Length: 194
Figure 1: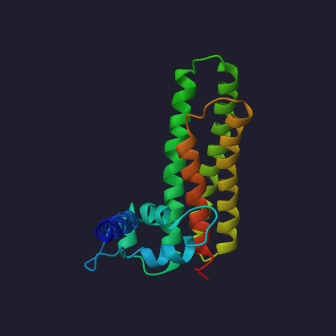
Figure 2: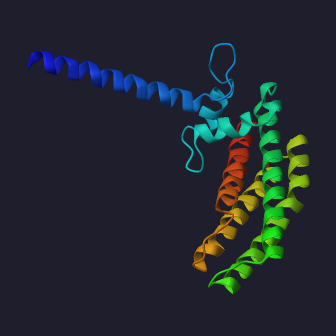
Figure 3: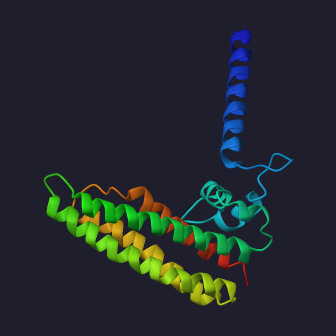
């Protein structure tokens, strides 16, 4: 029995080590020479206790832009996150436009069209705000940028909420979620840019 207990402990210990290694690799995306993402400290600071996004989302989002490798200040990371919001909103608005032109099919066709039109207006609003938001970050007007980003996060939530209220499946759920999280990430980064 003692032998069985010992091999069980070793097996469980190895399993725990493998799980920890997998979790570590999941957090570390683009690593430097040390094997650790240079974004990790920044993302732990802004996302470690965030209700809206986690550290892994932060590392993945900022790591998707090569400018992050040379960013030195939270202000630089904020500018990148603002640009990511713009890119997301641009592609989401184009997807919504395509869905409207292509027409929806199903039992809730009218409800779907209503949701698409509402989202179309909401994403146009995001896109109209983004140039001013980017300029506000550049000019150090962080409270103005934060207000704009909070409106963008609310717009993404509102778009998704329309589908829920209409009891139809959202074809832009992932995009709405990303837009919301990117806007909240930019806001969190701005808190440290002062």
